[in-house]
Length: 263
Length: 302
Image (cartoon, rainbow over all chains, first blue to last red; front, side, top):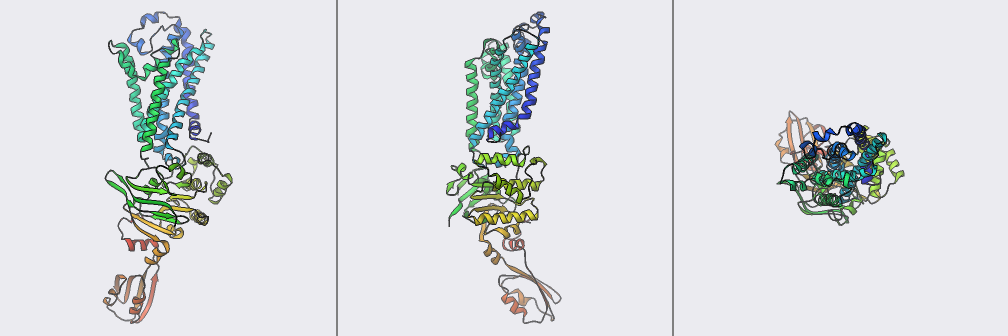
């Protein structure tokens, strides 16, 4: 685990990943355990019709079906929030964090290019999101097994992959700001603003007539706009997110290569 | 002589503030070069430019004839570095961190690392967060030495080390130069420089003011602080005109002064009077430094 920057950085995340992954898993599991209770209250759909503000804010759909229930309770808000917070933290800590602590000074004195450090740290963001997604999937699968509801547990994979892409996207934004400036506070601040703006753009775009186009500026639209839980993986949306990440990583490499390292 | 480190009109400005100005530096193969100056003089800035951590505003820098910017990775594979403000991976043990650095260097010589740890009396099995400043410095030194690099760049290497370990450090530096390897280190601790350096460069306010062979510097800056008691009255003016005599003070029949360079003329002058007692004090390198370069900005010089 100490043969390169990627593995060493992943090793540093072992404990946070266990805690965060357990949180994601337990959240999914406990929510699913509530499903039988909710599914027996069809009146909920009358209280929260699909086009109501609350329904839109929490993913919309039929709350009594497993998919609608999961979209509302898991995939629309809580998990994206958990994935994004964790990714922003990793993205910030990866380069700006090392720079602030002072370890970058000694790491960069070793025969390794700055671009390679950016690439390996980006890989960590992506793998951490996959692992977080895996624990979430285990939580959902275990939950539905316990309540004996006949659901294809593999359909959760598509939204979880999109979730991992969403987390990675926010993580790479934090990496970009952090590696370009060396400032952890700025990286967290900017990325948190992006996350909040993404949520607002996506929700307002659905609620306000004529503003649908603003959703295209939100990463959350590409994550959930095509309803991956019910319609499977959206190739177009995942490509948009993946390409954006590649662009951010490339800019990170260019800027990080050019700038002075803070002492 | 073959230059290992070479800079040409190197300058680094932070905004309008110059950190290093017109630096022309040559460090030759096999020598120990002491880069001397008060804190904030530009020592660390020079080193960080050499390692490509920061980029020069103007000028050129090369190591082993390779450009420090474009060939930085190749250079770093042949250089061992100890930062002045050392921060290690505190969540790792010394052994783990050195293994990690060894992997990134492409080689890890475990027996040599153990030998270094033994010489520095350093416990590598403990987490770095549990170590004292001095012990962390030892781990920092081991990571710089462990790859047996052709060039060692050490920024204030003996900070926090106890005298016995400093001695071990000095021996190691000697062994390294016997093997034809080069050491470039910065310091503001003058006696340390005096003990191990072949040449020194003195940087003040970003400018390299003096480059001197250590022996020549010692000779040039040699002066005596003398205290003479006469048996007869005397007029101090008869001594004040002698070249090299300064800080002349009299107290009754006692005369104190400093004599720079050869004391021959001064001795002949005092011989004309009856001398009751004579005390000569050898100045420290620090005093010589102050005499040669004035007292401005030397508060940090230990």
